Amino acid sequence: FFSMTIWRLGFDVCLVVGPTLGYLAQFLRIKEEKCSEAFSLSVSFILIGSALMRLFFWWGKQFDTALLFQSVAMLLAQLMLLRICTIYPSKAQRGHRFMGCKLVHFWYWEDYLSYLLAIALGGMILTIATYFMQDSEMYFELLGYASLSLEATLVLPQVAQNFRRRSVEGLSRFLVAGWVFGDMAKAAYFVMTGAPTQFLMCGCVQLSIDTLIIAQFVLYRGRPPFQSDLAVHLHS
Image (cartoon, rainbow, N blue to C red; front, side, top):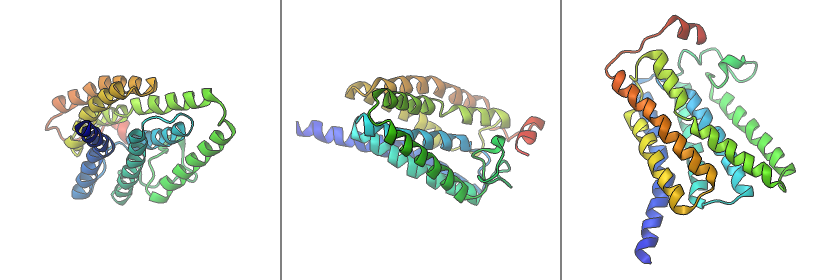
């Protein structure tokens, strides 16, 4: 019994901390190169949005505590990553802020305060909605599906970013490895702990999408970034 308890505690710690390590590696890569062009900020948007919804999902349907702490840890990791991305903003971020920005530039802002305001606004909307819908089981079920469905698309913006650049230069391999092995570990954990169906579905979809970015690392290995006319237009 004692050994099983230690094993479970160790697994929970890995589940909470493990997924954030890849983003720490990307943080250090951006800091070292003083450039954030390779990283898709849409990844942070997906993770922050998913984490916020999962926190409120837990309010109505209390799942395993380790998954709750994982959401908090991921939220903090993304705030840290957004900070370094505003210190070394990409071309797509320059000249854009939350207040008065066009939809095409959403989440590509050059100042950190813009992200904090957007996150605070999202949290406020979820707080109000959850307060008025706290007795609705359907609301929490939909919130859970929305959170996990959003997270399931996590890798897609980075796949699109790599495709536009025809390169993976500047993208941390530890981040990608963290996605792949983290998704495998999460899927196994969901099965073992009997997590809600939303979690298991998310894990299966993520594992399927992970194969795309692995293929890109093989295809674009060693290639310098390429800026197409379309990419320049979209980021102007």
